[in-house]
Image 1 (cartoon, helix red, strand yellow):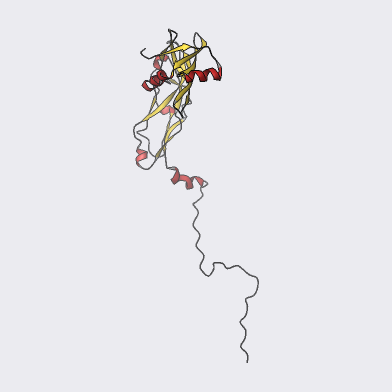
Image 2 (cartoon, one colour):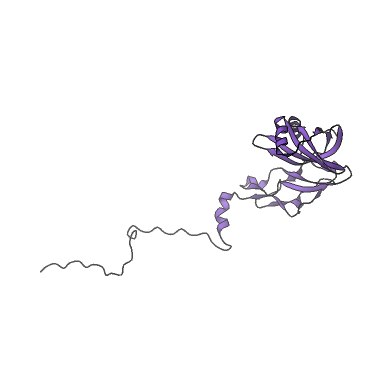
Length: 227
């Protein structure tokens, strides 16, 4: 395994200790899992940044070296300050080569849907899928081929072949991607009840009728000429 991330144990706990670590360019974390007592650790923020930029860190199985001892691990929970681009806290799960792990993997679409060329747009229903597999079979991503989707078609998880050695834990009937009519064009149609027709525009009143109000009084008579 080529990917190695180095860390060291830390003593301080709580928000105050975590703030001090971040001020020193370190990121607090925890290592737990198979055969490992939960241990508080810290890592270089620069090392983490480089690691996640060079690998699919959230799904990569790697060696986490803590005070010289290596553990096969995956990043289980990543907390990040997206405003400043900083890592805030990371949980690592220790795993074994012969024991399956459960994790979430990103779905990546490939191809070009014919339905888009005819005016449709891609609508995403599921971005990540829960899987189970051995650490050595963890995929970087799940690939969804949309090259056969026409306008109105939908791709469900059951339509996407699972990589070798991978089992989907998410409901296979879960919608993943569909090609739909742009919202601006289907808003009025969505508001109509089944069998209801679109309203017909009313005729504009004539100039004589504008402002006229019905009255129960008889119309005034013109005065008769004097004899």
